[in-house]
Image (cartoon, rainbow, N blue to C red; front, side, top):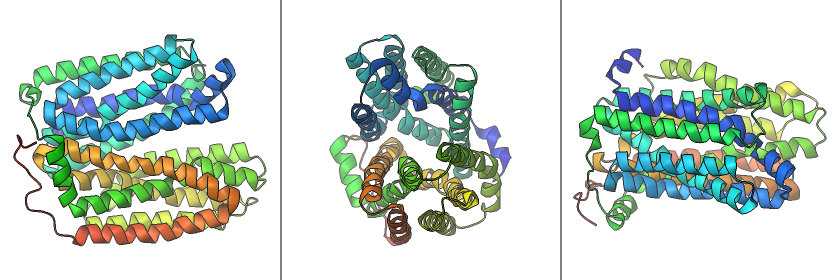
Length: 406
């Protein structure tokens, strides 16, 4: 992958990439500590906090599909600016309100707004770059900075005492307002991107997606992959805690740091190393690394920390390879006039995270962590089969209804 492609990036692509870094850094200054704030300052139960945050994740995933389609129908500019305004209003509500009902509305609104920005933003990058290799580099760079922001945000929040303070949400709201202003400037400098394309109606898009079996198989595989990845979060913490791991909080912190550092340090070296590989082989390697991590988790010894660290390194290297690559695959599959709809439909795989947390917790409570991660390893084999089937299924010639069909 040549860095010379950076010269092809127009201003709107840079706004999406650097704007993602800005808002995700601000987001992670405070969002990971939201549960502490809701419990400490408002006395909410763990169940209610979980319900609010779970509803936010589910809403964000579902709205991602709708937001992607709307950006095809009404234009990227309208939906991105609306998403920035909703985000700014939602986080201002979180920063200023002192009533639980308004806080819950702000949390849920934040999930809705993310769904209106993420898929249209990726589709805008695809619109703006004609060269496939340039689009691939842009998607990788966006993912890299998203993870860098997720790593830096909590550190900045803790260092400056911002992490568990309600007022920090105002800083996040301001960052979305700034992003909206940057989009206004960017679209003014790129008038051709400001034109609303009047894309196909929802029924027409659903017919196209329903005929595209390769894309449906890919999305199912991605959903299962996210379900497997979700076991690295709360289920792993429950597993280690129930197993009586000594200094469990320190170990969990070390594992989270290992994950972030591995991604930040290795994503672009791995991209360079595998640049000449076929996508099929990169997918196989990434899923094999996920499978190896699940086996190590299943066989883990709570007294041997290096065992868990190696497992997380395998998982993180697999993540470096797979997650940006999946966006590249979706970009390759999507017809030019349906980029937003395809990215939006692919975002439904995020439901795997919510399903994974529920399934993981239930399996740990009833069967134990060893069984959970053993099942996840088997699921990785199923994911490999689905990716292979997706590559072999013939694509419909007309994944392209006429733009006015609806």
